Image (spheres, rainbow, N blue to C red):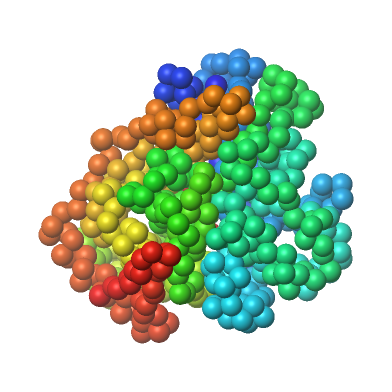
Length: 514
Ligand SMILES: Nc1ncnc2c1ncn2[C@@H]1O[C@H](COP(=O)(O)OP(=O)(O)O)[C@@H](O)[C@H]1O
Ligand SMILES: O=C(CO)[C@@H](O)[C@H](O)COP(=O)(O)O
């Protein structure tokens, strides 16, 4: 049996799988609290992740009805980019600053400038630094909390931290390391020179974790932790990876031709590539996959975070919210929402706020506002998809994951807006499943005779035909007009247009929206 856990922004989800029989045996989840403050501060206590993991694991094992001593390996997936800075006793020097924190926008702009602008970033890192990435969080800590900064002994990402708590080892792999901003995503190596620009007082050779391949072990569960979790001795902990990298594995997106879209707290759209992809701008991040290869990705910051705000404003539960969305027509009777409640990454507007545009005395209804926020969040993903150009446009199918994918009406909106067949895996918690699959892969690699990752994905990633949504021709046409309205609002309010060129060593792809 193998365990996969995904430490998302809102909760940690755990699955227990039996790859031999291709079965998911149990699932569990526990929420985490978000510490929010002025100026875009969004932080979490790393201890809360550990607590949630332990509780969710207990629930998943209980549901599976298995003896925990039958578990062979664990894989951890985690929200990307969070800064977990530890002192020499392994204690956080400050709460973890998260991917969705925009307090560090100024520090990010300064770093981009110091590195020679967007071109300089691409030359050194293979991508352009964004406010959400780890780098500016470290620069912020250095300036705002110098005492905490001085106590830094090691720097980890959220999933690296959970690996450390389980094994006592401080390691990192390329997928999640891609989002730090001090890692070259083409050569899959730390960029010590860039790290020195961000944190000149810290020695990267000492504070950065050792890099391992994603098929390698992070370590084995320590005896104390094994006793706490009821596990057998020497349970393996796989390298794990960022939640999007694990979502790719958990949706079988490990070779070119598929697109995965996640409707989580963030929205992400990504496609596997066998080569690094170089964008001439910041919209597409040339991240590495947590298997082999690369995972060019566009991330928007306001998906279920935005829909939840509107849903809660009207005091609706998820079912009633879905009903309201279904009651309104396409285009929400002229209401356009730019849902940038948290600021935004794609397009790069860290200081933006949300806008409700076109409200009048007839269209200001719960149904129109609920639908408009869902449409706005989905348009953001289309904008991201357009930046992925041919990498995404040739895709045969979109595999839809994340909490929002549970909504049938939203699935149809995604199919109509993105213009492709949309289907969900049977297991909604695809990142946790991907982590379990990676754990089984890694376990096999250590034994020297394990199944390939492709084989494991074939066995464990199954699609739920009842979730299939196909684009409807009339709806698509209607959405072209509504999407143009959204883009016009984006341009008018923020001067944002779509212009990007993606390159691999062999191709040049120009993305172009209407
Ligand atoms: N049927 C649904 N319709 C819309 N949103 C939903 C639905 N089910 C769950 N969600 C939302 O999904 C979010 C959780 O998604 P998840 O992918 O687990 O997030 P994360 O990984 O970022 O913690 C919550 O905000 C929840 O309200
Ligand atoms: O920052 C990114 C991707 O670059 C986000 O996708 C985070 O990885 C958070 O994911 P969710 O909690 O929304 O799953």
